[in-house]
Amino acid sequence: MQKQIVSVEWLKENLTNEKLVLLDASPESTVNKQISTAQGVCIPNSRILNIKERLTNKNSNFPNTVPSGLQFEQECQSLGINKDSEIIVYDNLGVYTSPRVWWLFKAMGHDNVRVLNGGLVEWMKKGYATINKSALPAVYPTGNFKSEFHKDYVFEFDAIMENIETENFLVVDARSKGRFDGTAPEPRKHLQSGNIPNSINIPYTDLLNDGKFKTTQELYKIFNEKADQDKELVFSCGSGLTACIVLLASEIAYKKSKYIYDGSWTEYAEKNKKFLSID
Image (cartoon, rainbow, N blue to C red; front, top):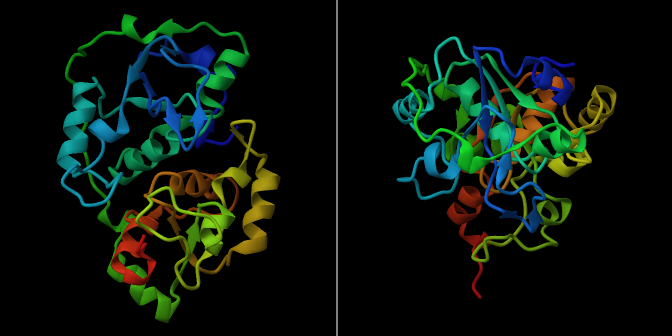
């Protein structure tokens, strides 16, 4: 098993580890028309973490923006997370929002974090016990977690624009092929689809099989056919969320690049007026 992800079998054996903190980072019930079959329940000993409510900079003009180090630190402390906590994060769509939380912990200087491969869906497929979320504690003893924000992990618009000319790094876009090619609409109706010049497309859905990551060999083949091994990779998507799925897959099988263009297509398209819809 790769160190970036753990299996549900591993979690079941380690669920009572005192230093283990299990975070349920499930999204709202409907995400991109996906409806989870595991609403209202969670894995025992979970702590609920709503990304949009707790780990997003709400003062930003763009969705899913990285929070400040202080905000992240305070939210983690309120969940009882400590500096020596072993974090396992999962969601109820298999693998969807959990890699974003995994990356945020990495960006905030906490390396002891992994994603549950297959998430709650895989846990339930194995017949393992669940509990109702309403049975979880509402308050936890304050933890001593500290953030050390790696600001260099977060790429901004100006760096992306400069790279169009210099091609110093490679932007990897996690959106669907249709959105990347400009033949399918964006979910944000005021934006037109398309892509950042010189970027490549690796849809996050191509990296998953039944809610779990494909094998290391399969993942490597996908990246090796499209990416440039000699270039640093910077990951993008619609708003910085599914880009983290592709980043994690690269960590597992290809090369380690921790960089996210956090504004992603939403920011790029809004700042390039030709991509704004006139309808």
